[in-house]
Length: 344
View 1 (cartoon, helix red, strand yellow):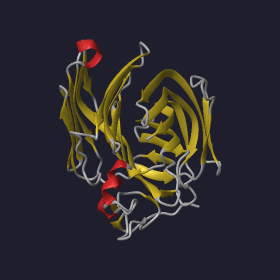
View 2 (view 1 turned 60 degrees about the horizontal axis):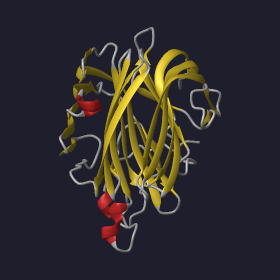
View 3 (view 1 turned 45 degrees about the horizontal axis):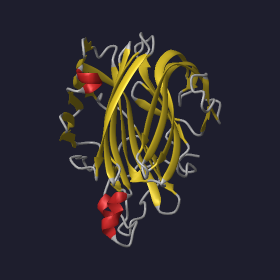
């Protein structure tokens, strides 16, 4: 069973507990993190808070992603670009003590996320139905440089996957995922110059806030693409974190509408991530084989902060069943799946 949130209100009560638990089609809860009562000494709370904005853009032959994160005692800003044809990927990141210079807004519906420093500029702006991604990283890939000026359009009435669940007795996960955002603009990486066409290029957002366990593990899978009939098709699947008894973040996003899935199993070979993955649910509504063609490994080891990500890009094949019973065939849908282990 999945508990759907349908009424707006605060994320946290006055005593710091979750006001509602479940999932919603729209961002209904105000992220009032000032109500946290995690530690007796309130100034310590910011060191356990995790906040991030992660944008991704798929083109037919490339992938681009940019993130601004505040992990409490450190900030993390990173950008990576993948070339599917040549099976190449490059990533660069900055670790920022005490997240100096990182600015993230209160909620996902408006505001300006930014980091300017160390010769790098990242700006994520929400302007009505548009989301602008601006990146200038002159030293990227030994001075080849990377510049992005991308606008993602949120279609009118589009639904997103929103979830709030407890982690243990005092922690929580609050997240919004938006898939299938038509992308236009430009991306320059060295000698490569891409002009994004919204009929073939789609973006997504992973917006997260919460207090996690120090040692954490999760799986995540995502894709955004077009069906042969012109409808957009998105996938968002996740597991491994928190209490999922009231809600999961598993969903099929068909023509910008959420079709909620219950529990989804990730079947893959740990430490051999390029082998095929399988995704099935407990209601017979999802059966996918994911065949990877490119692996991204990101390792950060700073003592108290440790992160190991294995993210593989590949193609999804199989089917998903919509809420009205439509069996949607999925053929060569490009997306990614990942395993993430962290001490943070």
